[in-house]
Image (cartoon, rainbow, N blue to C red; front, top):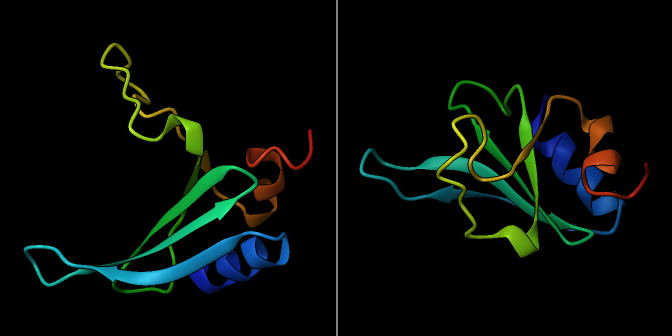
Length: 94
């Protein structure tokens, strides 16, 4: 999915989102970072395409939390692979 499409969807639902370059030891990486309804929305962007196969959503209150006992998802993220899952993941609908 395209990062620009996800960005527009977040903004249309009343959230904020930006696509930015984060410095790394290897030059930098692009990612989408946003907030919607008390949730962080994040997507790593491939350098070969304008997007990724998935994005993650996590409650802002869980920033910095880490469960070392969880091998699968220690940060408590919800992984989504369709933009229409954004409403459900950010608790806008049931």
